[in-house]
Length: 436
Image 1 (cartoon, rainbow, N blue to C red):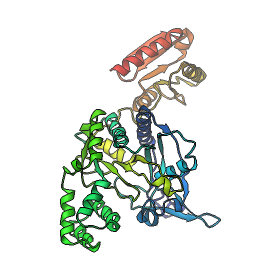
Image 2: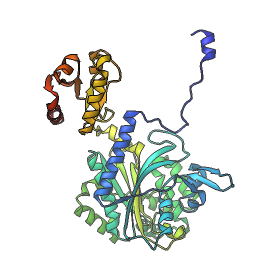
Image 3: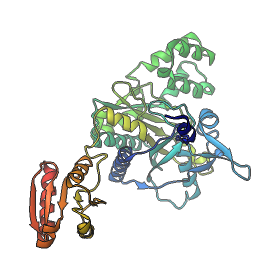
Image 4: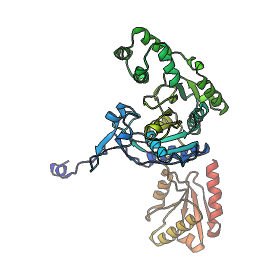
């Protein structure tokens, strides 16, 4: 490239670090996850809601954990000097919204939401600074059965997207059970929050670093060994009456194959109070595809009266990667929503082609009209690459005879029909295409 051209080139502007561009294929996948989340949520009777993207940082302080507030939130002062943040999660907002109208709402609340969130983290596989998230919560019921319903919702989503129980499992534990075991080890309640974080990091650290971290918290060798034994005990759940009831209902809901106990699951956020859970793929490549649990104190922490609650969240990026990994994406993703392409034979017939396309839309068909008079071969190739199954040719001969030619871009077959019979023919050909 000559120097003068290089000097005149404008620099490429890249997206902000940790954000994503959504080309049609990626947007179709995001929309598919959203649509499936909506379908599953509504099938269990949940209502959609939302909250502001901006929140005061005080909403998260002392509720979500110091790491989230001081290291992972996008915090900045507004023009009055108040510190606000792009929301890093939704549960505190949910608690605030419920507290504002606590006396007027009808319980139990079954609410779900979908929207963007931001965390200032190091971008890596499965993690960005901006992401979309499905949140769903059951509020006003303090029972293991409510927890089981939440996990069943999550399992139903996995099943609905074609993920099998051999590919993905929902791992369950209970913080109250673990607290009881920590007390049995002589670990003081004042250390429990730090020990929970230690448990949550076990699979992310070298064993030597993890053990050093345990000792730095003040755990002696006996307590550290006891904690490791606790995290290996797959039968520990049988000590919990709550988990026994939980697994009974999971069985009744027909989702037992997707759910199992795992003592390592503790969740990193401070507000969880009881049963907690995460979905992991069986290969161990992706942990916490979705995660949540019981949080009975959060509404009172933001000024409301005590109110039990349980829920979970699932980010779109990890869900996308898991669906891609296991080949669970619908074949139609990234293809044109149009089922019919009206071609333009020449400039003289262009108006007739656009008129026909408008008439077909009035009949309920999804139709794209080629925007120029190009060679028919080029137009057919475009339709085929975009996944449009049928193309209509409306040339001078067809116009004179009040007919249209319909070409199946998959099989190559072509028929000519009178204009009056076009609707029935198109319906029949599209039905045949869907069945094949």
